[in-house]
Image (cartoon, rainbow, N blue to C red; front, top):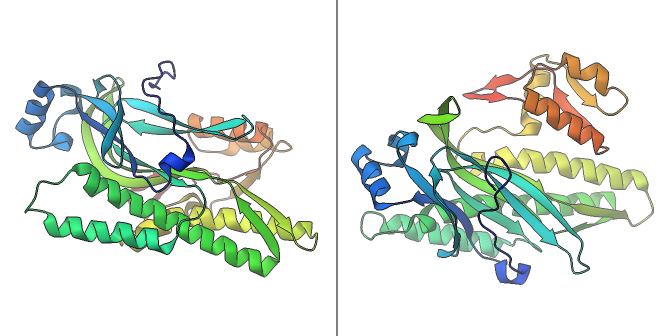
Amino acid sequence: MDHFGITEEIRIERTTAQLAGKRITLAYVPATAADVATIESFGGLYDTPPYLVNVRPVVNIDGVMAAAGPPLTTGTSQTVVVAFQEPDGTSDRVEHMATAGAYALLGLDLQRIDREAVDATRSRIETTRARMGVDDLAWDAVMGDTLLLHAQTYFLEVEGLSRVLSNRLNVVALKRPAEMLATFAPSFGYLFGTAFDVTNTGMTVDVRRYVVSVASRTGQRESELQHVLATGQLASGAEHAVFEQIQRARSVSAVKLIAESNARGIPVFAVDASNLSTILPQLHVSAAVIADVRNAVAAGKKVLIPRDEITYLSWTGVG
């Protein structure tokens, strides 16, 4: 959908069997030959003033185009909706934000990610690196596999930690199909709502669906709760750890930012329906974050949030 949430521009529907093990990517390519010429004159997409070129979103499955959308200006925000339909017809959906000019991979963990799959992706990346400067390489193979490695490594590690917890707490944990959006994207400077320059680039992983059903073998409700809470903390921590392992780059995640806030003496609040009205006026965060907190509490959730935004390295925000 576009940034107004009105127009459905690309729709792809596949069974999980058809998508299992596939590299599913979202790319933004120059819309016309004139846009290609403009980008080449500046030396590359991220060196080109965003308002000068249009791009169009393209979804590839294993490097083959599955669908394409209409042109839009670089820097425009779009919503990526991922919906799951159960055999009984029930469905649920999650949403990610993507910016025209980014490169994204939809990572799916449909049953279990194994070490062999991760090693195979790593091997392809090494082969691609050896061919650089010798052969013409598709960007989907270069960046697509890099993002895929991050997604696979994340799911492999979180599943492994979950199994260790299950054994220790004597519970059975059943994971539903999980997903994430792994992204290499520029950050844009905006003027009157239009992107006018690229400030930097970076990589992110955004896990929106990781649903686990837990049952104690001995009927211990407390063990079930411990597993869910510990898995959630480990899954959040893995969002920064995966970059530190693969890229050797210091990174942030929600749980890391909460810990950092605590270390700096910034109060961390647990917000629910009983204290929402008292805590919200104390938060020094954006209106969008306040809205997220309200919506989560309205859905019956408890929110852990530091009072203030913090700057960690070159990143500023809230966990």
